[in-house]
Image 1 (spheres, rainbow, N blue to C red):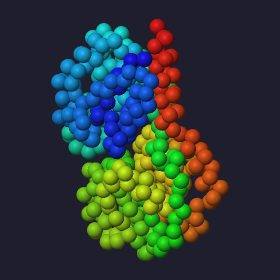
Image 2: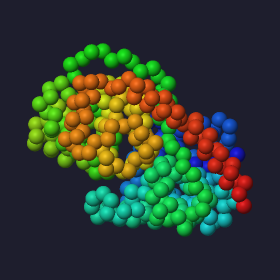
Image 3: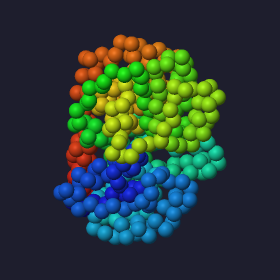
Image 4: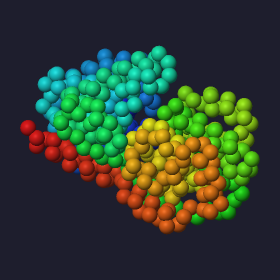
Length: 358
């Protein structure tokens, strides 16, 4: 089978971008038995902005013309932000079957995010997602919540679709969980973008309620547009129990997760969440916020808080009583069933089925 994978960022390990990690993981597995070419907008590990999107929708189209003329069996657009590629290759008469992976629909909301530039970008991406639905032979959703929303809003635009959940990093699945030495601090970790939809301020507001609990420490890893506001809030409320830290090197990611006693992830909108899956693979209790749009498959063993005060109570309770051994073992057995091998196998089955369809 001859396959082209189309993504925004060059697929590479440690990109810290979920869509790029998805592309990288299936590429590494597909290329062992198939001819796989990579087509991408940028080598830089960052998402599109308005300027990059302008390039993607203009000069990048020269690559798309070549793409349409080659004898691929499958053109797989692995990031919905490049949905216009489906429209272009169909217009240019490609003989390949076109498949698009859709990871979220957040930018269909024109008011998502902040500022005029963000709204302009959202508008561009929204149109690109509509192109995914209109011109793809098959849609792959990476989260069942995204599938449900898409079916509800756009069902008349597309026929064939499947849902394939993401997998944890292989080392997170297979490396033995170290026994934690006794220590004074109870460490609560957060890993992800400092962006409004990730809701990192919820972490700081919860930390404020626990600032007198001297042995509870919050280690908040990430970067993003909310960082300045987070640091201002930390300073204003004298949150000595909070450390705002950047991402470590890729080789230190496993060690970082294993340094936590709990994972705190009050995200509002997400698909099949890699941070949640990874943390559960390391045997960590995970506290989330009830106002989330995350797959029930991923949140099955999470602790759901109603608000910051409820989250603070959960943290204190788990610290005092520990993580129930039975709950932990059931969680580990369940979440380690997720894997990139399974994702690739399911994706290949979709390729074969789509090729056979007239």
